Image 1 (tube, rainbow, N blue to C red):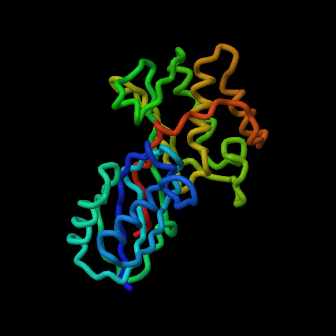
Image 2: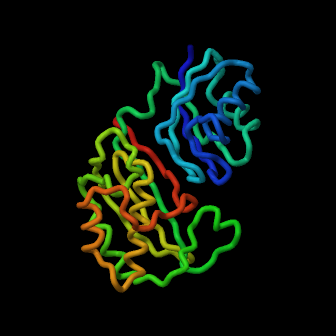
Length: 245
């Protein structure tokens, strides 16, 4: 058996997320199907992050097991030539042992983009149009509610069986020419966690009746049924994943 590590980028618009499932096309399924149809060999693929439907990635990391033996550069070239334009292997290298992309993760970086004016149809695939006026100064103060170690049960699906205590190392907000970008850094995140945090911050920054204390109260209640806005998936992109050396 041969083992590889790869970095994958994809436009998640037309996919039901990363993880293989019975219904709907996923990134993992397309990678496996394309490999088998191209090389006529079995393959196992594991991803570092289970991005959801319509979520994108520039730096998804995957581990590969296959009996096929080819130089890494040649394997990546042929595989890429047969993948759809929405998926690209950015890097592929052979490993001496099985590479588990979920182990030894130090940091994951995600970004969420939103715009306050409607963008072109091309840009709108990767950016939320938020059609409410926001208080930008207020928005810039809100991340401090979430930075650090907290129980984020109020900001996940509510179906997470493991601990909902997570640590967010940093949340940074940038004003770009045509959009606002929020960068999240942390070792791991719960399902919908970033989208629920972004949605909550947008609603509070657009409201005269809500403030930082309301976010803190929602966090403290540990209630996944809280009614604050969940930002849609198209603005979210997995940027990179860092590992221990």
